[in-house]
Image (cartoon, rainbow, N blue to C red; front, side, top):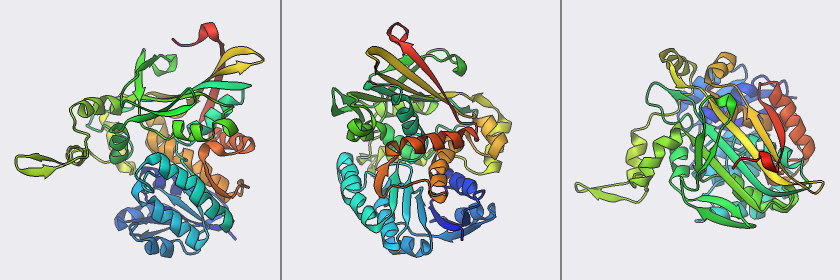
Length: 413
């Protein structure tokens, strides 16, 4: 008998996972759930196996009711609801997957992640189920690519995860994914690992420059950006990353360039201010003026018809360490379709294609029984065999890796 899965939140990521799972023979039913009933019904209507329902994520019982009969809950909701979804998964005895680790379980994000590992982990293990967090493109695909790069080393000193998003429309569209998530990440100090210690770093700070021929942009500048990867790699540095001492996540592109002056002007602050006698949050005002990420075929087609300013980008892992006593850099590039190619292939944006389908590959492992683990893990903790399967399946979607081994004189400055 085929599996039933519940997809909570049918935005860019959730809707893409739904479309990909519609092709899986081991899936019989896909429950598309959202607070926006019209969005859920629209996504479900485009599927052979879809059912659209309304769910109130602020009510754990609403989630649990929707999840009856589901063996897996794929959580594409904003982070604040993740505790409710985790609890509902345990209540109904389902596996769990999300796209980023929540910061909503404690005041401090690190404490939230500790709760995931140390509290929810044993609960899922006792229930005989698996929860896996951080399974989009970054975190997610890039974590698997980092593990693949570190495989080439005997010991690892430094890891850079580098993402440059250079897809730019002619219309005003700063972000191709959730604007609230994008601006929230950009409004906070970032995390890095330095000499084995997890530290905070200035948002948009500590710039590096990289140049890759295939981008066609010349040198690009990337800066600090609050992201999951350094935190998870720090927690798992001995078991998964060969004792890595330094970890950096560097980000750049049109959205980064748009947000930086807003941050410098204080317009990404969530603290309320009084302006002309009205109490407002600058963050909320900015967010209210941003268009949502496009997710429907007709929207994307309209953007393409208008023309693009740029359709480029990169995702790169730099892993520095020793192999047979020699200092080397393992430089791994992730290649994936751009916007025009993604739409031609699947009617998706490049962001939906890479993040949604990156996530769908983790879902594919659930529905095809490729996980043996129980408990809670982050995407950087999957096994070497699972990493190989992941990239075998990714290649079928046009998502491939190219790895270069560089000696010290060839390293970027």
